[in-house]
Every structure is written in C-alpha cells, then in structure tokens.
Length: 285
Image (spheres, rainbow, N blue to C red):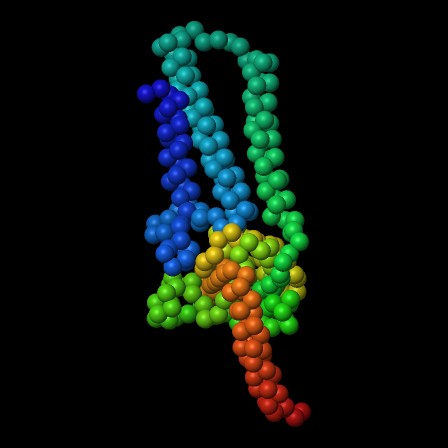
C-alpha cells in the first residue's frame, strides 16, 4: 500500500472517529450516543460549518504531524554519526529559513480565512422571525416570548423518575421547555438574574454567556424537527450540573397552536404569582 493510501485511510478514520455525531432516535429526540466523543449531529448551518472547520483542522494537524515525523525520521537515518561521520559545518541556509518561515504563515492564513467567515456567521444575526429571551437563575432557566404578549415560564430539571416517565435523558429533561418553528431564524436574548450562566445547545452550535445586568444575543435556525438538549456551560454554583435546556422544534402549524396554549397557561401562572405576592402582608417598621 502506498504512503498516500495509508495517509488517506488514517485521515478518514480519524475524522469518522472524532466527529461521529449523535443521530435522532425514532421518536425525534436528539442526544449523544453512548461513549460518543465527537460533536453532536449538526442541526443548523452554524453547527455544520463548525464541524467542517474542525474536520479541516484535524486533517491539517495530521498532515503537519506526519510531515514533521517523516522529516525527523529522514534526519535520524541520513545524518546519524554512522551514516554521516563527517558532519557539515553549515550554520545558516537562507533558502531553508525562508521556507520554514513562509510555510507557517501560509498555514495560519489558511486557518484564518474560514475562521473569520465562521465568526462572522455566528456573530451577525440575520433578520429574525421571532425572539426568545432566556434568563439564567440558580438553578433553572426562565423563558420569555417578547413577540407574543411577553408571557414567561420557568424550566426546572426533572427528577430521574420523572425523566424516565417522560422519555427524556437523565439530567437533561425539564418540566417546561421552549418551542420554536423549524426553518425559522430565532433571535435569542440571554441574561442572568444572579451569577454568570451559559445557554448551550451543542446541536445548534450555540453557546453564549448569560451575564447579570447585560443582554447578550445570538441566533439559530434549526433545519430538522425534534427535541434538542443542552446544559448550562458556565460554573454557576453547587447545582450547576442540574440546569438543563430543552428546545422542541416543530412545524409552523404546531408552533402557532402552542403559542395559543402558552398565552393562556403561562399568563394564568403569572397572574397567580402576582396575586400570591400581593397577598403577603407587609412588615411594619
């Protein structure tokens, strides 16, 4: 087998092994596979570009490592004391210095161009079809839909028993979750009420800090319907590992029906909370 075939085979193996993503189960739930070490299966253009960029870097790193290893082996064999008893006294070589300066510059430029394109894709938010606001709390998330009467609700983690009954992965299921339509651009506004959190959905390629007193924003446009999971990715306290995120992506018709239901259900919850707070007697000084 030629060296080129060996290189191609090893590269294909590394890309497949390190980037094998989780596929959807029959019920449309997207989650990591057992023993998975690669990325989640991309569900957005951003995540797909992230995976492609990673694969390109992986191939480049392997190529550079193989070249350096081959060069070292050549030097060991060609210039050892036995094969070359009279070593050269040359201390500088202009051509060689130009080469080992130019090649790293070319490699860095090759990395920089797609890197800047990816950063621009992630940072510049296109015209949004809807807006969702996520507020990090210790230790749950509060969600608001400013485009729809500004209703809000809390999403807390299910117990292990509740997760089994509901069919969600352990430590990733929540009692409530946000719903967004498929193939629509969602503008996500993120903040926090206490400490720094991070709203993260691996399959979307989205990870953004939720900072108290500051509004950060990002976006996603999911290409496939289903249930997607994430977690707080910023160490935020003792229950940091129990702050999951669930996003259900549905058709436009199902989304419209959910909005009508949510307006009534969560508006009732807010009204009950206001009544409860108003009924607490004030403390006389």
